[in-house]
Image 1 (spheres, rainbow, N blue to C red):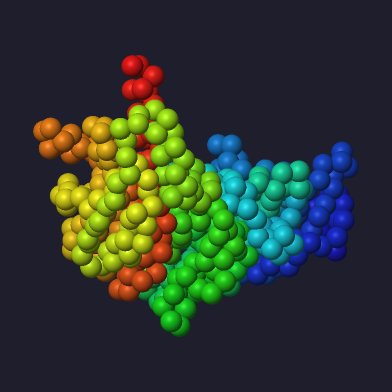
Image 2 (image 1 turned 180 degrees about the horizontal axis):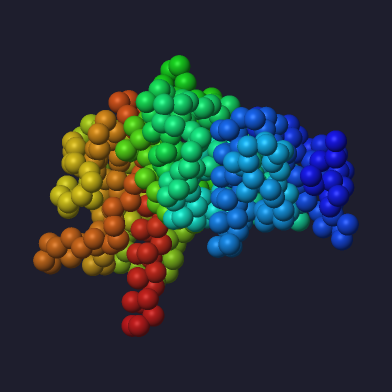
Length: 451
């Protein structure tokens, strides 16, 4: 029996067989390339409702210029027809390969390409959420990276999407579970979980970012030893991007994004995208504060012969021994920069955090110059998670006033054992010292130019 679409579309061969439908590459008589999805079980009311919802989601998103395939033809308006006609949809053909195929072929992409891909996908999900649409099934086989530009990505499957504004009959109820082999989102696999929680999409975006970088499917939010995906052997970014200073910033992102407690994760796509861009624009290469100090000492000696070598000593309280150890090991090596243990600075933390434990500040100055900077570390907690925070300050020795130079920045989140956070904090201190040295050198050079 001829299929309803065969008079207008030529079948060029099957592409895939998914849980709900068969997918074919097709071409129209005018040469238009398309992908046709035909429903398998046309007497399943829930499957028909889902296909109708998928088409409605694609049409809505395409109308607001989201990166999804355009719907070229469909008969899903017949979803409630009692004669059960075979439902189908034809969408535009996107020339490329799935993110899964691309990552398998390349072994994982660079930080720059991964950021571009996930930001593209996140932009679509952000638009969807603003229009009350949830995706609920994000994984590497549902994303196409274009052949002409692997950093250009398109979401191609909205088969489990849900419209909170118009749920319709027959769609997934909160009592029904469904699994995703890529990542078992807790809310979707636990009986009684909220299948309509938009934060599950944000968690999936975080998992896709980690997969694009490492080629490792997370499968579960935490393994048998309690480790999150980015903490497992082979899954840490330093295993792959050890020479890129942005790795620490992305590990901080993953600590937040993969948090076990949903209230500790990113709460919106917008929040995730902001952190993604911040991590991407952080230091692009590991900088050595010893090298920066040596270079700065030479530059300062040429400008001001009064400047001389200085030593610093510091003491910190637990659990900041890792920072103190680093400072002690290098205290005689920073040349003209005097580094010292500063007073605790008790500025209020962000409102959503409770203050926890001691604080630690590293003071930085250049002898014979009235320049003082402080790098302050504090701990805050939210629920059962702890976050290490850093903030820079300017200090006026005359008045004793500390002026914040920017907001508190999250360094690392952790639960229970702070051991995994120590390495991240040491790298963060190195980066902060480099930035501080640069800033102080520039100010001295500017003063010298004016004399």
